[in-house]
Image 1 (cartoon, each protein chain N blue to C red):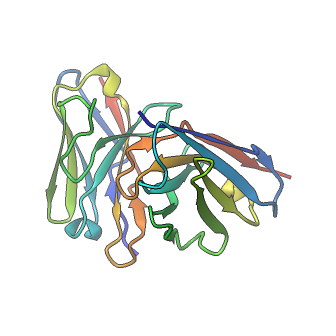
Image 2: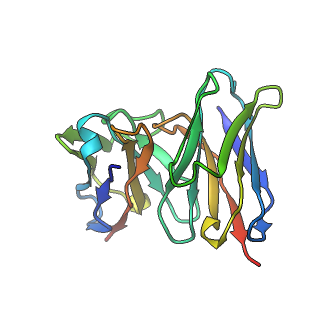
Length: 115
Length: 108
């Protein structure tokens, strides 16, 4: 059964770049698509973007100018970069397998943006 | 862009049936997925493709679709079903993924 684990810096200052990695075990990256979703404290889910099995990406238009999602099949990792963060980017960040229907999720990692 | 609208909160008596709805124009073109999120946990897919259950999801969970509305029905609701439920779909004009605002289900 596939397992996903997110990790990265948990505390950032405004204007810094958020960098998260999702390590995938028990499954092949190259035959699936992958998504990132975030959830601000006490709020609902927000789709960040997705990358399909051919490497094509699709991003939330509200974040598109700042976000990059990539896959490193040699390391079995999916990465998320979000530049120029502000307090509004404070959230739990999840990686998930699939696009649209998200069949497996990581446990999530809290990223706090504060000066 | 499209939106998905859910009732913020719904309650149901233990053992009874509850329907949680999700409305949006994108649902005329795309099926909804449904996710259960218990406090402090990651979401879990409970329905996909409108009415399909992933392996391991109890058969008391079912999904249906009509025009611009998707529904998640829980038959014989259990105490452990108390959670937030989110629908998602794809915006038919932009191809972006959208989530509903979530429904908090209380089991009385």
